[in-house]
Image (cartoon, rainbow, N blue to C red; front, side, top):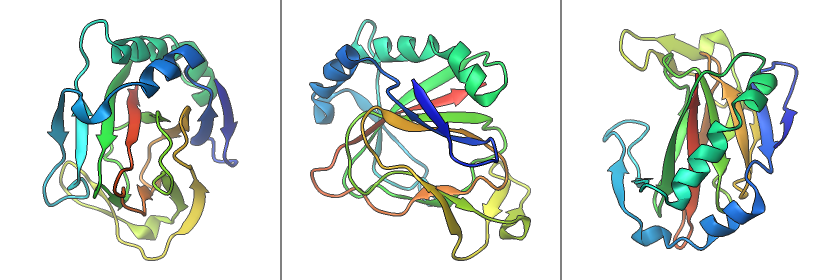
Length: 195
């Protein structure tokens, strides 16, 4: 895995070449629309979208992918400069009409790694620079809400297979996907909660 810290803040890294070629080749031949899945989303929230959670089956390519990521704990620890105890993963398959607005993850999210598994032009994740006055605290599970306007782009991650990002979550880590997945696009990624 190659990585590059995006700026001096030490809370966001671009990653590349995370997965070896044979595994990427096995992923590329999967019939994504016909894999077992469940719908994933929360109606009426920033997660009201067209997202499928791919179901892993014992011994399939997705289990191999998860095992590969689990074996990267020491390397990820060195990148984020803290010990990684566990990595939980989900496979997200976003279909036509999916989008997610600018948001800050809730405080229960510690560190995240998202690995893009397909090429999907125009629907990568964008991170923004904001200030404390742009965030409102509320007494609910989400807790942190972006209330600012016109944030300045900090970093844009193109949705290119075998690339992605690692982020340390905090109240100013605003991000989103400003465009919508179009017809015939396949946006597949491995999303990892790092603890």
